[in-house]
Length: 244
Image (cartoon, rainbow, N blue to C red; front, side):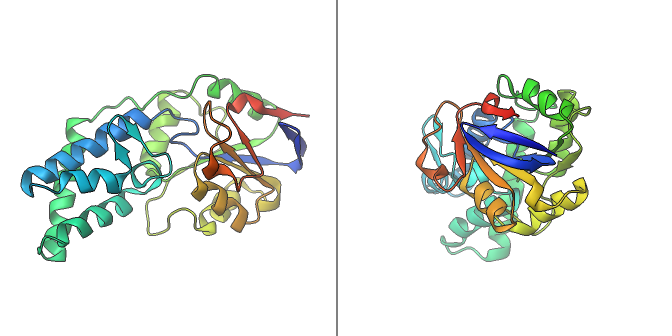
C-alpha cells in the first residue's frame, strides 16, 4: 500500500485508483456534442420542433456541452428514455416513442461511426503508467459500454497499466455505489483502499456512498468547478496525483 498526495490532501494505504473515462481520461466532449446534435436533428426531421428541446435535455448549447448534463454523464439507456419522454409528449405512444429513439440513435452512431476513440487528455497516459509502476492497481469505470472502454484501452495500448475495463451494460448507472463495489471486487481490493477519480458529481457521489478512500474531482484547466465541490480534492491535471 502507498500514500497519495493530491494538492496537499493525503490518502493513506491506497491499493487501487479507479478512473472514469469520458472527460477524465478520454477527451470525448467534442464527439459527444456532435453525437447529441446528430441525434436531435434526426429526431427533429421526423417530429419537427422537438430538436431544440432535445438539445437542452442532452445538455448541449451551441458549441458547448454541459459536463454534468445527460449527454456527458448519462448512459445510452438514460439518454434513450429522456428522448423518448419528449417524443411521448407529442401524443405518440411510449412504444412508438422508444422505437423512434432507438432507430435515430443507431442512425446517428452509424453516421459518426469510427473505430478510433477520442484521444486521451495530454499527459494522462504517462500518469497511468506512473501509477501502475508504483504497484497500484488501475481500473476504468465508465458510464459508456464495456466494449467502448475495451476499445479505448486497446487502441491506446493501455493494457499493461489497466487491470479493470468496466462499463455499464445493464440497469445500474452512476451514482449507484454498487458499481464501485463491483469494480473493487474485480480488482481484489476493499473500497476503503481505493480512490475514485472522475469529472462529474455522479462519480464523486458514487465513490463516497461506496466508502471509497477518497474522491478526486477533475475538470481539466478548471479545478474550481462548483459541481466538484463535494470531492475531497479537485484538480486541473491528472499529473497533480503524486505518490509519496
